[in-house]
Amino acid sequence: MLDKIFNNKNFLLYWTGQTISGLGTWINFVGLNLYIYKIFGSGKILGIFLVIRMLPAILFGGLGGYLADRFDRRKIMIVCDSLRAVIVLGFLFTQNLWAFFILGLLLSSIDKIFLSARGSFLPNIVKKEDLLETNSFTQMTYSVVMILGPALGALLVGMNFKIIDSFKMVFIADSLSFLVSVLCISLIAGYEPLAVKKKESAGFLDEFKTTFGFFKGHALLLFLFTLRTVDALSSGSYNTALPVVAKMFKNLLTLPLDAKKGIAYGWLLGAWASGQFWGSFLAQQTKKYPNLSPKMIFSVSTIIMALGMGLTFRTGDLLYAMISIFLGGLGDGLSNVIFNTVLMTDSPNEIRGKIFGTVVALTVSSVAVGMAVAGYFIDIYPLHWTTDISTLIIILAVPVGLFLFSLPGGKPKAETGYQRE
Image (cartoon, rainbow, N blue to C red; front, side, top):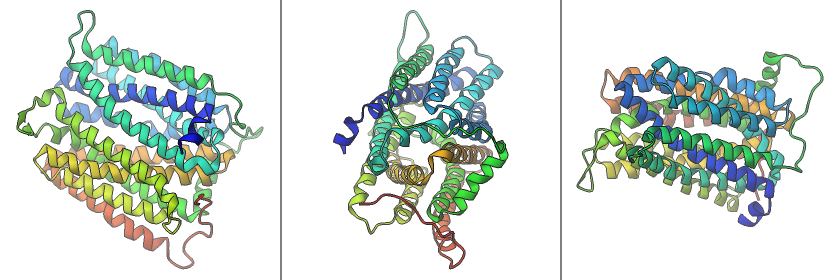
């Protein structure tokens, strides 16, 4: 696997830029959330901010896909990272709530455009038969970043800088990481054409009808996409509940914790990322077992993810919670690699941008809705009630989906072009 990856210079540049910018993003994720809680002292405001950052998903995920099928995807990524490097510095100069909301919206809007371009760009620099290994390696690396990023974010927040506030160092680090990404992406060259440019456009909305039409004609993709959307909707409760439950732990191996510093939260995120790492590793091992269909692997891994996350909120002990969330990450890492590989393999280059844009728009929007609903119920009922219901919905969606997509005459004819050896 590593020979194929390291012999592809374009992918190495892509991977280096995304790894460093991902590290900055996770440093910012922990630092910014703690900064908002410090300034405004309200979990409700933090929840609103997290939801607001997901609001642009429908419009800008779709717009990103539309642009990615008409313009150089590499240049779109460069422009997006350049803008993000500037916008994130805005948090240095304000403590106004509305300014935070506006900056969050701007960052989120550009994020969604970037994600659509990035997802549709990778198959332009990686051979189709290498996509499973490449996605596995990328997800494994991202999992390591998820461990290091929150830890570094918590470390930066806890340090005392004489010249500048520790929280502001978080934003500077994130900005610099985007600039490194810009440099790496700029050096990518000599790849296949990025997109098919059309002289005549059928219109923004009309072209996305083509995307849904494509999904209808591919049974595996439609099943994965449907289950992924249900998963995202229900998983929104996990995102909302995790910082809350992290404050409830009183000890870690008998050592006192200061929850205000985000230590427990960071440990949980680290355990989740560790699970994702090994789940991603298992994904590329599935090539050795051609009898295991992508549909079944994805279904089982989704159930494992839901069970692991559900158990996380059922224990009052941090160590047990870390074991549970590790299992959740394991299932998520495996399902992510399978989903992305099938999507990249089966999507035609000329509409790949819109396909990824549609996926980004609906899944992120579903998470936002789930977070908003969960935030309301968490304030009224015991926290684990909300997460239990979410877990149950995801688990039930798997057999229901398998049944519906196996009805004779009811499923699309095309299955998949997914490469299995």
